[in-house]
Length: 285
Image 1 (cartoon, rainbow, N blue to C red):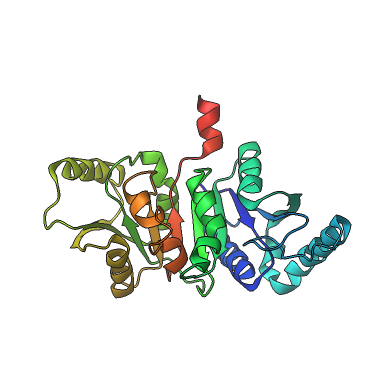
Image 2: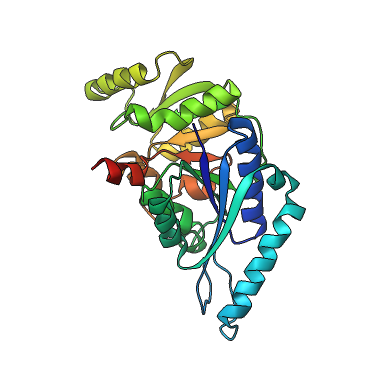
């Protein structure tokens, strides 16, 4: 069950769109979900994604007043917010650090944040907060592209190299599938025309984790993993792309190289990056 949702925001159009998506998503999956809207800021600040680009001359007090005024406007912009129990938090910190601090102190089940498409030099700067939050493995992260509009999640594509999948990692996928009666497509993109023996064994393990859930496998040959995933998503009208961004393998091929395209920047549909809840892992240890 998804009970606690954290939404980082900078009040930009991209961030407001992500918050609107989060509210509609929460209403479908759990109307009793509690939502935390988090703004992280630094003083002074020249530029960064999900921070305010304040003039160096502005005081911290002025910045706080401005943030409060933006928080106060949210219900007017998004009336659906009134239907939820929610809190707003402002903190002087970098986004990734603020999200990590909150996630380690509170039982966050899902982080939802927007991201902007980018290319060239901008790609190294824009959207890096989503990248950093995913890489920190704090909790599952749902990334909403700036132009994505909320749609019922009828088709889910889960892309994996079949390694390192544990049953609890798939809990968000199971919850979404139950709420939307979604179809699950398991996709594997490979440069080779046949699935290696070790990956075939891992695929069998994944089959066990998905027992009882309607799903089907798709094996594709493509030298570019991202390109193969993108083509599949467009052809099959995918509403949610799910990835397991491990530190090696799929994560490296999708997110690891700044000079290559990244699904975070270029995905046209919402992307859910699965991750164990770091707070729960620490408590278990």
